[in-house]
Length: 125
Image (cartoon, rainbow, N blue to C red):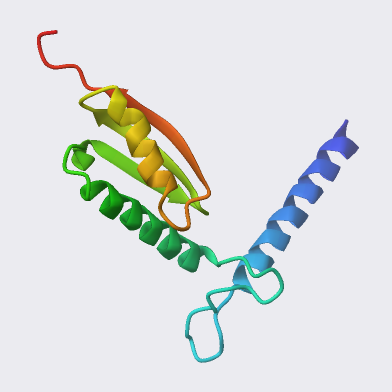
């Protein structure tokens, strides 16, 4: 029983040491500038570049929605992650749910749309 406990503590310490070492070797260069926007091996955006791309895509979807005056985009939140867009919030009519999804799908860079919109009920109803 004691040997098993010592072994699990040793494994935990080794994992902690390895993760701290990997974290300390992070992406900065000698001059202190930020890491490049894409990793060389995979072509996948780094954290900061990915967040910027996600925000830019969200803004594009909002801009496309704003062109349609019948849709109150202020009641809709757009979350983008690697081309996948999630729509949350409310619209005033049921027909607008599909319209908003179609508008979002038409924005360049959007690969998929998760539509979680619902119809806003007027107060007192």
